[in-house]
Length: 468
Image (cartoon, rainbow, N blue to C red):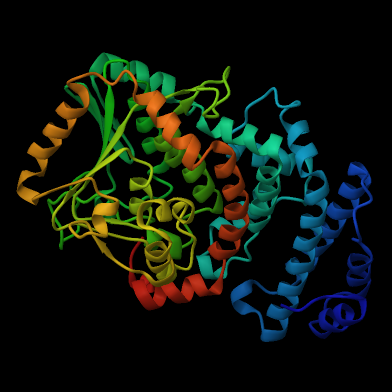
């Protein structure tokens, strides 16, 4: 990455025909923060606005010459360094102002929109996002990376980060209405998931049949609502997570747990950066910690969550994000022919919070082999049984599930929430998760827009020939 100073910057940007007066003004902006939020914001925002103007004068990314691509990368790099400097000093203060001194909970998407409105130029505008969302992933400049920088600094601040974790553990805005419908009907059909009752268990079935139950933008809200409703349902003692039957010719009519992130949608630019953070701070963390209340601290020592045991049923495979889900569950029943993988190396992204959690099950070496080298873990092996609690033949797995449900509920689960918290506080208290997510928010942003991601998807997934 080219480092831009006044001399090299003028030469580099002059070489591609950018206006010298605009380049000069852009280069004069910046400098170390002066610990005055308003002056620092004015300087940072002005630089970033000028930088965006310079980028706009270049051809669209696919049409840029090597020199123009180098110029664009240098502009983006310098402006992101300015954002990092500003947010390192003022990120916590900005969050406190956006939430009225922590008195308002804001979900990620609302927080990002409000920050963009309060500090135009610091985060991408709605118009910039609309323009980039229309592009293939390879053709994006990655304006959403700036959202990742903002979230990284918010999460790195202890007070702001814990407040945001609390906000994302609260029920989805539509959960109350769907809870009412579930109480009336005993079943829910949502985009991405269904919810039913079986005895004293709430059964959440993941549904994306065309894409092997992969997760994407179309499944996220429905699945998190189903998890909320199942967790809060007073008529059940435990919850079950399983994949539904799929349509793919190779597996037609079979149940599969999950193929992870929808790689076809990812390649075609249909997965936003915020999808990753919403997923891991929302539905995945709720499986692990329960659903929070607005009037109680969700930290383990405060007991401020509604929670119940979660049982996973693995049919076929749990790939990528599917395997990540298993690491949050209390008991995993798997078919003897099922397997688990975390193909982060072949995708070019970070596998959610698996880096934080997998080693607790398998030990460090197997975790590194799985994450960094794509090692497959067959469920019915000594290594697979480190994650899976019980193995059954594919033909008997439904009967085995009935046995698991009966085993969990026959004597009641009155101590389940307390035991979950007691286990969690020694393994992964909420503040440890916050710190992990501060790193993840930044690193995943850069991975999501890396040229290596596109190359990996074309090499390992034949993504360019798949229809979204």
